[in-house]
Each structure stands twice: as C-alpha cells, then as structure tokens.
Image (cartoon, rainbow, N blue to C red; front, side, top):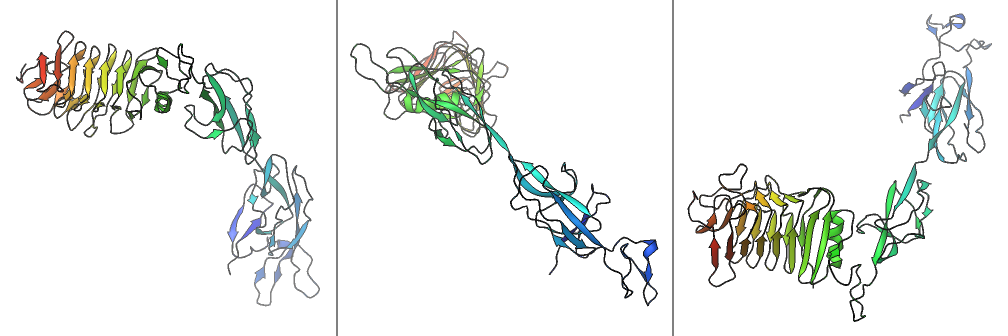
Length: 458
C-alpha cells in the first residue's frame, strides 16, 4: 500500500517538501560520517554512535500551539528521523468566529499548511500552529419596498440563524405589512415577520405589502382586495416593469385603466391577458426620459390578448431583434387592442413572416394616433401587417416605407413596406403624419379608405 507523507523542513519554514513515498535521507554531517564494511559512506544524524558501532536515529519533537484558540493543547509528539507520525486531529479545539483548518508552520498562517491527522516526517524540531479560518459572515438588509420605515441590517455567521425584523414601524398607504420576500415584486420566497431565518449569502429582503380592500363609491360595499382607488386610474406598484406586470397578473381590474410608469430600460416578453377580466386598459409611459423595452430572446415584446387594450404612450420605445424568427414586436391577438400615442416608437425588428413591427390578427384592433414605426423588416408588411379579419386605423403618427432612410422594408415584391393587408390593400411609401388610412376587416365585406395603393412605386 502506498502511503503519502509530508516532510516538515524547519530550516526553511516558508517552503514545503513535496510528498514522497519514501523517507528522505538525514542531513549529512562531515563530522559524523561513518564508513560501512563495503567502504561506502552513509548519512547519519548528529547523534553519538552507539557502542555497537551502529548509528542511533536522530530524535525530534513536534510541538503544537493552539494559536489563540481554546481547548487542551495537544501533547508534544517525538519522532525519529525518517519515521512518520500522524498529526493531531484538532479535536476539541475551538475559536469563536473561526473553524479549525489544520496546522501551519507559522502563526500567521503564511507558512506551510498540513491537514489535521495527516502523516508527516521531519528533519528537525518543529512547532505547528493551529490554522483558524474565519467563518463567512452574511448581511441581511431590509428594504421598505415602496413603504415607509427602516430596520437595521443584521450580520450573522454562516450556518447561524437570526430572527427577522417584526415589521414594526413599516407602513404604506392602502396596504398592510405582510412579512418579507426575496423579490421586490413579491415573486420570490416569503418569510414571516419575526421568524427564524438562516441566510446562505448576503441578501436584501423586501417588505411584502398586502393591498387593503378598497371601498367602492357610495354603496359602501367592498370591492376587490387590491390597493386601488375606488375610481380613476390605477397606478401599478413595483420597482421594475417586470414587477409591475407581475402585479397586474393577479390584480388587474375589469373596466379600469392601469398606468405603468417605466423608469428604466428593461428586456421583457409578456402576454397581456387576464383570466376572468375584461376591458382592461394598460398604459405604458416612460418616466423622466425615453425608456426602451427590448427582448431577452426571440418572441414578441408584448402579445395583447382578448379583453386587453395596450396603450404605448410618451417616452416608450419597443425594440425588436435583428433576427426574431417569425415574430413581430407586438402581436395583437383576437379580441385585443393596441393604441399608439405621440412619443412612442416600435423599431429594430426583423421577422420572417408578416408584420415586422405590429401584426394584427383576425379580430384584433390597432389604432395609431401618434408615434413612429420604423426600421423593421418582414416578408410582407415591413411596418404593419394586418390579417384580413383585423382592424387598423391610422389618424396620426408615422409609418416609414420607401423613400425614408432606415424605413420599414418588405422583402416580397408588392409586399407593403409600410403596411400590408393584401396585394391590393397596402402602403409602400412612408405614411407620415397627415396621411390617414383605415381598414375594417370585421365588416362583411371588409372596407378600407385613405392612402392605400396597389402600385409598388407609390
């Protein structure tokens, strides 16, 4: 059986001797050389020769220093030159805030490390110092998450638990405090206030706010359990667009308008549809300056489902992808509605199908009173593609096409660079402000008016 041993060389305690399967020869001493019967010399330790003519192996000691720890210092271990011993296991040694990590040839831990219980040899007397590794410490920070109140951050050793703040002093109008969550939008892990918690890393916990049931106007009855005013627009809470859309998923109200303030650029892909709800209006508005909403992968930035109206308002840009499969930036599904106002933009998307910027499905509706659709590409309908059963109305804004730098592009001949419904209902050139057009695919037969053209060079 092969046994790997370590050699402790105290002549140079800052370096180590590589593991060896055989003990090293003792250091030669010219004053103590002896010659064997064969006339060959051998290295011996500087010990007086035995009366029998055989040299006695040198004997050394390994002394232990617990180096600031607590416990019984291990007994000094004697060892003969060339022989190996097992180092002390460190059992019973402790130090507050540290774990025992073996032995080192220097007190500050900058020497040679030896594992507890490992097999070693030595060619001199040695002192080994307990090596103490600091226990990692984690910090738990509290965030009021839209409310008021503060709590002191808590530090704790890894593996140890703390009692979470009980929420005392935290308030938010229209809400009650409901504990803590690992995500500002409430989609992470919930923890009860005052409960025991053992962190696995430094973390921020966010106050979890439960909406107070809102009272309806004069009836005195109780409305849905959401933090909304009884009348008027609902300002959607949350620190990010993703968090706000998460809130809407469970709190959107029928026949109400929801204002979503977008305060930073963000990549997202969401289907806006709310089971059991109807006539839900969601207005996206950039806060402070223009905000760009991009895509994390190939799909729509938004798919507008039945019963939902998505309004793109001021300072909002929806940014597609240069190779986005067969996907438009916005897909307006049956029963869904898209509205574009001044200050909104849809751009930068390439689709292998119909509608680079917007595609309106049968039964969907797109109304454009402002904004810009530009820089998109598709097989047909570079800017906008409308299915024969969809509805499209343009009373303002600009949809670029031929004759405009970075205009929308249709790959197919007669494919409608700006807008496409069919080969006879399409717009190739830029449709700037003042050029109005409409198509009502819900009528039987469909009707259309405005600046459509069958000519590719319009």
